[in-house]
Image 1 (cartoon, helix red, strand yellow):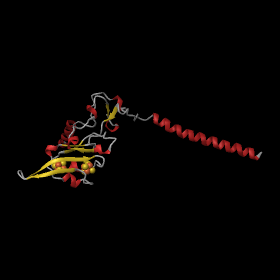
Image 2: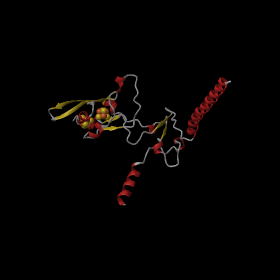
Image 3: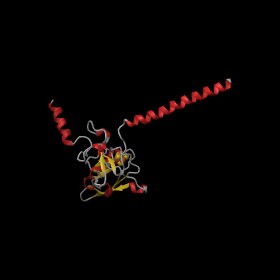
Image 4: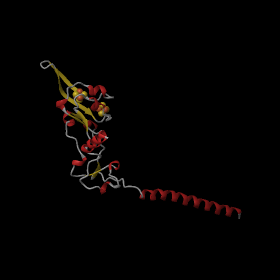
Length: 198
Ligand code: SF4
Ligand code: SF4
């Protein structure tokens, strides 16, 4: 009799425990029903990268003076600057320039310190490749115009949640013309002018 009562007690205890765990699991489920949707239907939809996103580097061959500052400030001395000295003009002549994006950590140092601003970071982030050697971009590949999500007619650009206007919880609800993330330059200038006049 005592053994039977103990078994019933144990069974009741386990039932209560199981109900508690089911309740905990369902509380997570119900909590998610209150949250904003986070799904992006990639590759048909893509998030617009942040204003200062550090993506693939763009290089302007004609502006480069082969000073190699970018190599010295790079934590891994990555950019390869191939130049020769022109005795007639007494200037360096740039032959080739390359950056291997399989190794680059996108820190932006080279862009920051380049004296002629011939390097810039773009919002291009789709660099996946089947062969790592294809990630070694020469000056022609680096000079390609950057890819922009908002210019691609094949995809629907979505704003990141941080950039959604007040009151909009779902990026799919935005009207099609509001494609740019963050403030426009003219809006930033107006805000700066207003701040200066105060
Ligand atoms: S720092 Fe700029 S100008 Fe100098 S070698 Fe690098 S890319 Fe060219
Ligand atoms: S982004 Fe950083 S790691 Fe990449 S080439 Fe420039 S300095 Fe080097």
